[in-house]
Image (cartoon, rainbow, N blue to C red; front, side, top):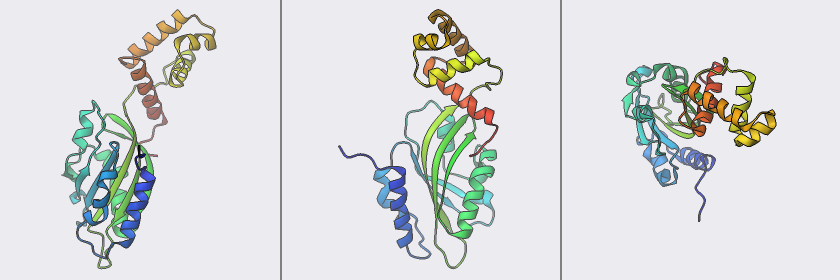
Length: 229
């Protein structure tokens, strides 16, 4: 079975298509159209209308959204066509999105970046490439954006109130260790570790161990205290 194309491979194809595109191309589909069938479920393809001098009037249109199963209703909310002024998370928009597309439209040069950020009630990590319209007559009228979503995690509580034993258990769980293996490493009984895990699940509001690990990783991202990479 043929392996699916990677973000790097698709980005390279998009870049080649962008390089060969004519100046002032009106429809960005001429660049991204041939590659729709290559996009994986975790990839997002969008076009931003950048004709306005005011970024709040930029318009966002999702050509292909995030298609992996998820319980995040907010993720679907984010993928609705909208003007920048109507985007649900203005803090993220102004800090991460607006500067990138304003700069791309002005400089008319492709840009790539790896981003880890908070959006609404989620922590999200993704790779991104932006391809602006080549327009010798002025600023770009549109920009294509391709995102490769690495993870989407629920917001977790901060971990600065946890003791060393709790942090050790979370670390070992994230490494795939079993209750017995954690007990051996920490020189405690398996029953004690089970009780500690149950207390951690309650503290984090986790439904199961996998959920607990995800929330603890998300909490660690929160503790860094940054909203971008």
